[in-house]
Length: 497
Image (tube, rainbow, N blue to C red; front, side, top):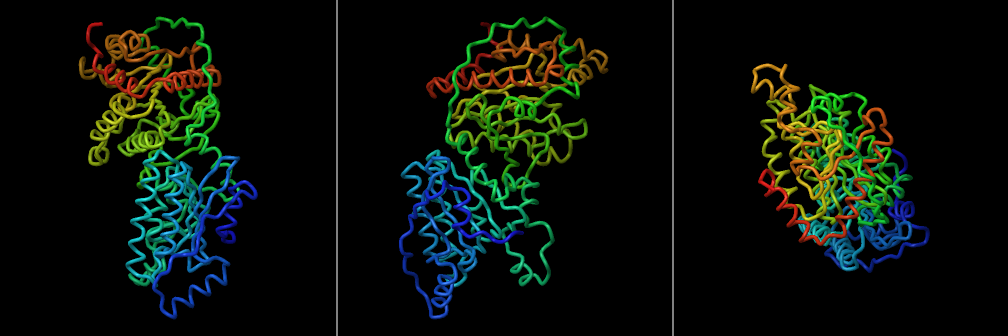
């Protein structure tokens, strides 16, 4: 770890120069004995502060934001009644003024000198943050070294986006406390920012010098900031009437561009996120804040580069999808879903961890989600794992994208008891893009000229342009009309037109 940054230093790194304005007033009075009073006086002399947290507002790239930052030098950044009251007042003021909120905790947790009364302050802080988020306002968290105890277990873990300082000690129970209680050291390497990132507890590990850039990019999406304009509709492309099996085989090419190519070549902004925030991170999927031609969205999709026959999406992937749905709904920004999957995991672990119920919850959440949604069938669309991401206001498909209850080989095995009839089953089941358009399952086909794998950059840009066009169109529609149309769409599927 590098030298520990003070509260003012971290704000200086993020905020525009000279823009910080303090919101702090004198701390409220709390009961103190002589020893505790001496500790407070010593902490004040050491740091030049009157409490373990500073609050206020400033600007980031000209945008007003509210800020809260802990000072570890003041009694290990611990939170007592006065510090908690200062935090809550700042959160409530940010909510009242409709400001995004940036928080940077570094703390040993509850202030032991104030006991249980300090301990329960975390409840009111968490409540204030929840009200702020319910007002559809962004909350970003940067965990500094160390962040433990009640702080990590309350306002340190409620961010829409949560990242941490490299090498930071982050955990629930401090290692010194663990050793004192259990007579042995806590396992090495568990309570680190990097380990929590790998395990889907936080979204990333970011050096302080890069934090400002991350905040700027994240707020461009999280605030719904859009400078997108509607592109003219392209001339209708001729979609060749090729056999479904040909699309299946082309969709399986190892060099076919997937969601990572879409972000690389078509996104005008991206902030990668990670995991469910609850200790799950499935490498077969990807979630990111993104903008396509200036139109903001939460992007979630299946990542073909993380899949193999032995490694397919599990229930954790769908819990990540539901995190993306909740993030989009809380912030009232669109959700874009990318379908490109070999199929969901067929395993003992997947069954026991609730794969089927997670598919059901995704379907229920998506159909009723209170934000614009666009689904893109980018390649393979096999089974419930594909269906879970399908229901949307607008559904697009690549020319060689396809959707089926099983891979054609599986359908052949059921009907014909062999796999040799797979091409015939692909044709009979209506899985290819032209069939999906005819049946009202998709709204538009994105051409491949002649195959996405042969033109990865141009194809990805074409997909990005199509997404942006739909996002701009949906943004102009009244929410109630959009929701009614979505329900009606799926209610009428398969009925005579």
